[in-house]
Amino acid sequence: MSGFIEGEDRTQATLFPERIDDYVAEDSPVRVVDVFIDDLDISGLGFRTEPNATGRPSYHPKMMLKLYVYGYLNRVQSSRRLEREAQRNVELMWLTGRLAPDFKTIADFRKDNGEAIRLVCREFVMLCRKLGLLNNTLVAIDGSKFKAVNNRDKNFTRAKMKRRLADVEASVDRYLKQLTEVDATETDDDKGAVLEKKISQLREEMARLKKFEVRMLEAPDQQLSLTDSDARSMNSRGTGMVGYNVQSAVDSEHHLIIAHEVTNVGSDRSQLARMAKQAKSVLQRDILDVVADRGYYNGDEIRACEQAGIDAYLPKPKTSLNKARGLFDRSVFQYIDEDDEYECPAGERLTHRTTTTDRGKQIKRYWTSTCSNCAIKSQCTTGNERRVSRWVHADVLDRAQARLDQRPDSMRVRRATVEHPFGTIKSWMGATHFQTKTLPRVSTEMSLHVLSYNMKRAINLLGTDKIIATIRT
Image 1 (tube, rainbow, N blue to C red):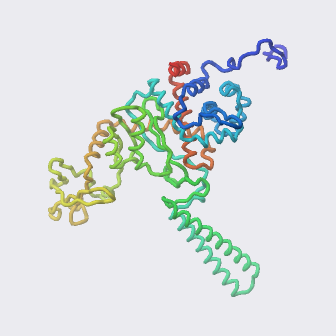
Image 2 (cartoon, helix red, strand yellow):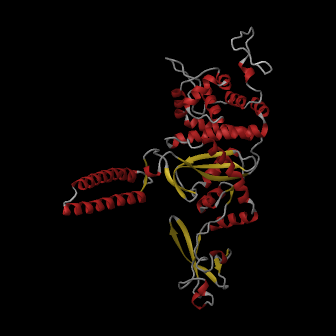
Image 3 (cartoon, rainbow, N blue to C red):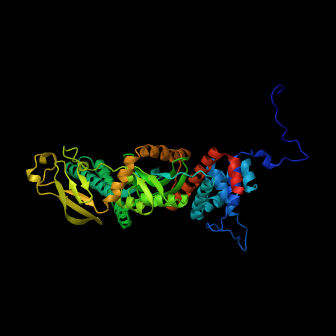
């Protein structure tokens, strides 16, 4: 071994043992975890802070919280792995005071303190605001689909159940027909026995599906998942998947996740106002700009944002087929606000004729009686006259479109903002995420991921020393 760097003799005794603190670097993120949680007032967050009157004392919630935050910060999410790391990881020994809870205790802490852990995530966002990382007034909102363990074959909707039952019935009919032919010829008893066994198995499958159908129809959304009970079938980039929809509001300057929420509603249509209000509450702004994609376009949601002092920037989806049919698009009909009329491409006025209610919304209908004599009628409509509909609060949508026209780069800002945070979290989670969990447990796990992402982001932006100094002051 001569000529090489040699290590210390592990059997050598020392008169003055080294401190465990010497093994933890001064700029290590674990020091931020320690100072942040030590300074945190957890009395109002929902953690149980009073020790048991009798029996073996429990571990302090702050110590357990440190263990979990450190684990997610270093992509160690399993309770069994955290148990092993607490026994051999020097940084964890330093962080927990060499305490090493068993995996069941670690798992139960996450299960029993879901809401409190989510509030801790909010507390760190408040710290980021104190650090000056959330001074921007523009927030991007988006939804990200996270796959559950629940296989698509173990998720049932009304349409899927109808198809499955029809397939089983068709198979039974086919085997019965084959069995009749075998009985008529009386040539192959073995084949008949095989067919009877298949028919029996299919009838058992049909009985099983009928039981699932009853459970499915009793559910509020008439959907059933056998493995992850709260997971739901939803569309993701053009394909179906069973999972959860994680909504997020992200700061456009430093890409910190300001607010997040896990839902099993596959559509983003009803999510805009709630997420925007959460972001506004966290940032404590009187006015907030929010940008989202066309999947969030909903008149009621945009109006709710405006009433809350939030300006929404999002494009209107193209749903009309008139342009594809060679007819005038709705956009060429100009609304005259002072007269409450529309002007068509031929220069005629479409006047307000009636107001109806469609799915809870009041809709005005406009048309003119001069369409039959119009020279360009064939380019406008195939009916007797062209009718235009308008929501009574459509001025809200007009203002949203005007804001979008004045800020054409908003969609580019949205993409640059929202795709990084959850792309990073998904890469951390890999293929082992959300293993057989209910919606509250998924929400807790996501909060720990968001907390670790924001903590890493803040450390990269400001450094360990500045964050620790701000917390201590």
